[in-house]
Length: 61
Image (cartoon, rainbow, N blue to C red; front, top):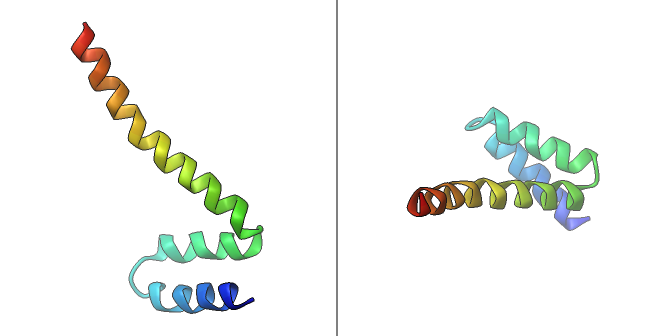
């Protein structure tokens, strides 16, 4: 419960700076946060790996 309260406080503070972040936290709170956080971490990892693979392919060609 404390985790959710701290997330809501973060939403209030970050709403002034980044509307996208506000939407992201609302989705986390409404849809069962852990699954959404894991999905976002996987997407960030894949997004970081793709340029690495592209550079490796360029090196071998």
